[in-house]
Length: 269
Image (cartoon, rainbow, N blue to C red; front, side):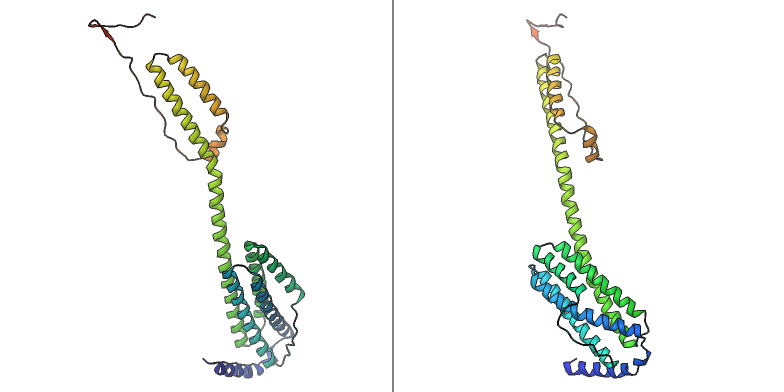
């Protein structure tokens, strides 16, 4: 559809709305005026916020939101004029929206993307609620349908930004889990290494017949190593469900030596 065709359609719609002007209550007129002002001001606010964004993707999204909000304001202005209501024009943004968009720009300039996205979701949510209040009034079908389409579009924006936050939170949670389990895992590996070393020492000593002394020495080494580890309850809580295979000491038989063809018996006690 060409630009001239769109203007013709809007003009026809406006002519039809003029017949419905008498059906609007004062509350409905006030709510439509508020929606127009909010759409016009937020279009300007999103343009200014886009200029403050350092991320190319965020800049493009904000400019897109500004264009859509400007189109909404233009349609609402045409609707109000068709109903015989003057919209008026002013260059400044309302005080409430000014504070909102100033905060949004500060978040973008400081690189706080999560704070910026949260602010956008909050602002769009407030706009959706304003449309809800207008839809509860008796409105011409064309106006009602237009506002419903705008509301669906805003809800889609909120859902996409909410998904961005969810993905960011999931990634942050994975990083925290990796940090949380890294140290306990290292402690367990260290404990297994110490136990393995002690087992090797015991085996070596058993081969030379000094089992008692080696056990005492190995136990002392293990006690010192375990004293540097976190408590057993802490490791158990951190690594709940982790199964470590049990270690079994190999059995070694004392060798028999033969001398002059005779087996040597047991050593005297």
